[in-house]
Image 1 (tube, helix red, strand yellow):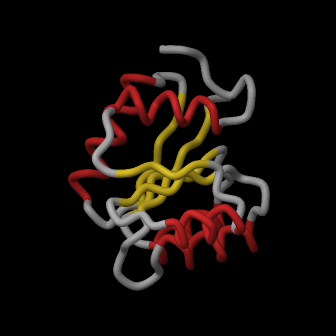
Image 2 (image 1 turned 60 degrees about the vertical axis):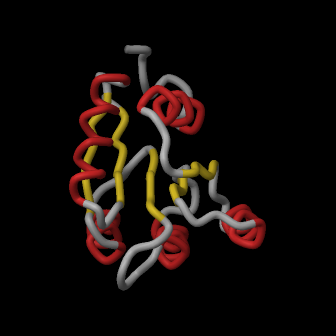
Image 3 (image 1 turned 180 degrees about the vertical axis):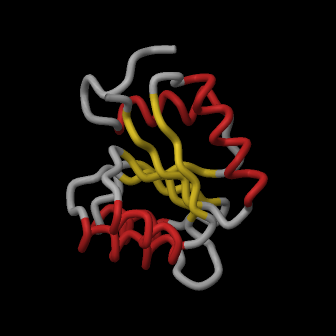
Length: 128
């Protein structure tokens, strides 16, 4: 069964580009998109994911609120947080919420694919 990844980013074009790049780098996975924290929480309530890749800054439910809600639904799923607005305080808060990794924007497809391979449970993806 392929790994399921949920990308959460309010920038629709960026999310779609990231999805396309991931499918090229990690072809044996299913990638869903959510364009808001609210949409992500709705998807997470109805489906299981192996990994969440979430933007920090989004209107409404932002990345940290999303992670708090996610931990209520699935305490174990790895989360990779993406942002162009990092700070030491943010890193510490993310670590306390169990965020697997923190990724500064901009990044390239190979960089994110490598990070996601590390974050995904063993055996859930094959190298592309």
